[in-house]
Length: 296
Image (cartoon, rainbow, N blue to C red; front, side, top):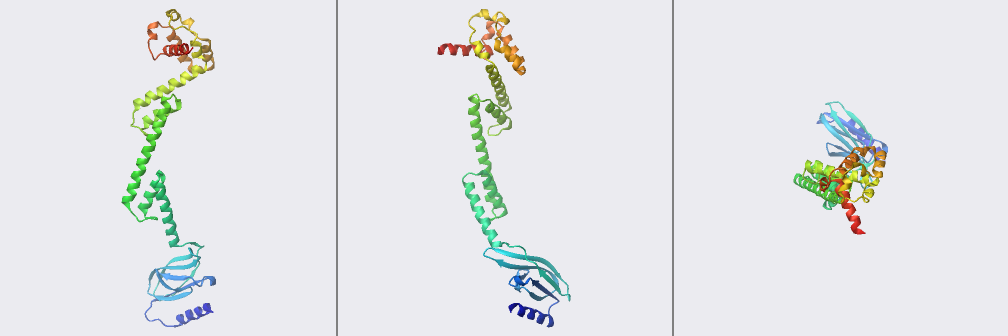
């Protein structure tokens, strides 16, 4: 009955002369969308279908049907009215979607969660919150607060990098080869520690030496050295008397360390004076022997 009355009203308006309008605009909807509200330039003009007289010009037509508490179906179109030329629009409403109020409420709730995570030290949340303050999404736009949270994120990243470096350094000092290389890389990049290429090179060299020691120990090199008396100068007079069988096996099994092993053999054949070098392989092997003897 209501729909029939609206149709009658529309026909009546079309038949009535209008003295002060330049054009007519008619907006129609599907039968089940008859309760949709029509607005023109944000001014409500009635429920669909509707006909209105307007001056020539460009207008934004919007048709909205409420669906539930927080959803709506929407039709939007820009219309150009020409003087004396009626226009008709068939509004096809969209699928249900969140209302502007619901979208705003969700944005505020998400911003509140992001703020809580940021306050608890989440760096990603700090950066996300800074973006929200810049855009004014879910919060009032506040460039100063955006800058504050970006600064907090930068400081938190620096602190995390420093903590990670200290952990790596502890592992490196404990002889962990992977940690030694990681410390070297940190010094090279300046991540968590002031950049220092010299220290990076030193830690990388120590890592390489650690790797060599592990390979020699795996080949039994240091076990064989326990059987030699390093306090006897006579053992250094001939290079042929100081080549453990395991070392020769290591040469065959690990070609990659052959040159280093030959260097060790030459070092063993040198005079006792060179044995005084505390960094030499011979000196370190002797120290190991003394430790073993002292423990017996």
